[in-house]
Every structure is written in structure tokens, then in C-alpha cells.
Amino acid sequence: MSDKVKNRLLIAGAALCAALFLFSGAMLCREYLDQKQSAEAFDEVAELVKEDGELPTLELADDPAQEPEELTAFEKYADVYAQNSDLLGWISIPGTRIDYPVMQTKDNPNFYLKHAFDKSYSSYGVPYMQENCDVGISDNLVLYGHHMNNGSMFSDLCKYESEDFYQEHKTIRFDTLDSFGEYEVIAAFKTVAYSEEGFKYYHFVRAEQEEDFDEFIAKCKELALYDTGVTAEYGDQLITLSTCEYSRTNGRMVVVAKLLEE
Image (tube, rainbow, N blue to C red; front, side, top):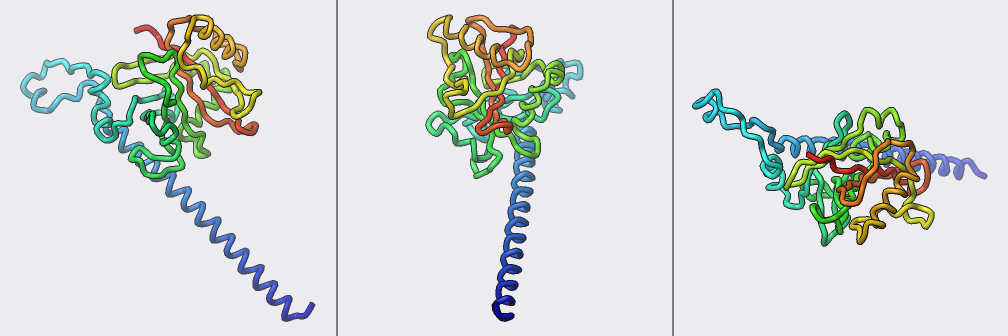
């Protein structure tokens, strides 16, 4: 091989390395900006949530002894709903990073898998409810959220693999526009999607009969990573949170909980 050919190959190789370096840098920059934009957007949405005691200053001045009125669920999230009527509720797990609005688009089921709260494209998406679930009607409300590498969205669900973590995070809050809700964790388990071997937990939305409900709970307890000592009976309202789990192809981490009586 002549020196001329060798030089050309070296130049081509160097150009290829430079191109790969620039491409990798661009991808990292894009990921950073997407992460930053997603975090800022959720912070802005969270600021729209009202808290009890947010009375106008003039009302408080007129009657300093006036007791702050307790907000209804709709009043608490009214400003969020005004920004996007796809809002269904708000999910949070105290002591974790899970604290997000929950969306639903029945006519476009997975829209928020890759869209932000303002409906722009986002790899982070927004937690959303399965399209065939109906609040107040369905026995089981199925919610999905991404497992992001930076620990945001539903990433903290995977920490339920540890029983110690469960012991410190036994309850989940899921408020709808109609009511506030506190749920107690029944089971945490791993399974696989798109496989006959996996548990199709997302197929259980409404029990046609008591046996259907009992069968679902029994399977959840069978797959459970540990015994929570908590179960559910026919008539209880369930919530199922799902995210990706990376120990195997198409893995899923699933946490099932029941609504506590007020």
C-alpha cells in the first residue's frame, strides 16, 4: 500500500472519529436539554396546584380569624386542568421523585408516552392512564410512566424491589378531579411484556365477577417479591403502576395498591 493511500485512509479515519465525536456530543447535549426542559415544565405545572388555605389576601385582612376553606379535588387542580383538559389526576409517592400529573387520551391511547404536558414532543412523556380505564367505574386503574436514567418519572417504582424501601413507602396518593385518594401497596412484582410468559396485568380493568378479581389478586401475590401482609377483596378499588425494568428484555416493574377508606 502506497503512502498516498495510507494518508487518505488516516484522514478518512480521523474524519470519521471526529464525526462520531460530534454526533455523540450533540446527542448528549440534546438529552441534557430535554431533561432540563422536562424538569422545568413539570415545576411550572406543579406551581399551578393549589393548597388548602390559599385565600385571597383581602379576605384574610377583613377577618383574620377566618378559617381557610378546605379545597375540593377539582379546586386544587383546576388551574392545571385549565392548561390541559387531558388531565385526569395527580400521582405522588411521598419520599420519592414521583409527583406528577396523570393524563388520559382515550382516542389516542399512548399519546403521552412521547409528549409533554403542553403536547410538544418529549422523550420523557407524562404519566398516563390506560385508555379503557374509567375513574369511579373500573376496578383497576392502570397507570404508565417512563423509567428514565436520571431517576425521574416512574423510575422510583423499581426501588420497590427492596422490601426495606417498601416498608418506608407503603402508601401512594392518587387524586382525581373528583376526589382525593390514598392507596396501600398490596404487591410489587416483575414481569415481561409482549410475551406469553408474562403476566398480562394490564388486561384486568373491570371484574365481570368476583372470581375475576380474586384471580387477579392471587396472581399478584404469587409474583410478589415479598409478602406485604396486605390483600384486597372484591369491591376494593385498585391502582396499578407500571414502568420498564431493565434486568431482562421488555421487563416491567409493577406495583399494585388498593384505595383506603376515608
